[in-house]
Length: 165
Image (cartoon, rainbow, N blue to C red; front, top):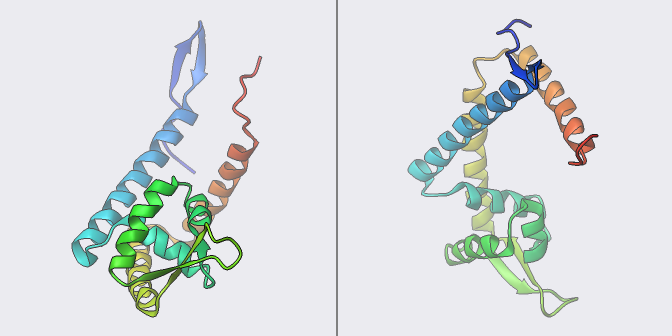
């Protein structure tokens, strides 16, 4: 692979490799551009939001439904954030909510047939947009990047956040 040489700066009298910072900034930049494009397209073409899509996707993967707590954990957001999105989906007829048969305090949310159709439409568009955004990369490069990001994911999991002496 070719690219710009690692940037080095003086750090405590020594040269420090800044490749990690450059990599993080590149990842952030790419993710931000892709996310903004997807948000704008959902809003412009479907009057939908990315959080709405995320809730529909999570429910699509759980045909028996999910509790509100499980939904917020799956999406890594607060229950308050999920509640607002679910309420809007209820109003639009895309989800239904029932009381859990095993815990009367919990509600189970599941997709309606209309919600399944709506999600299928959004999902197809989402896949097409992602494919178009990555079309400038060869299949080989996409596969290599996927493998490298897998290594990054393992590195992140191994980082405990503790300072090293």
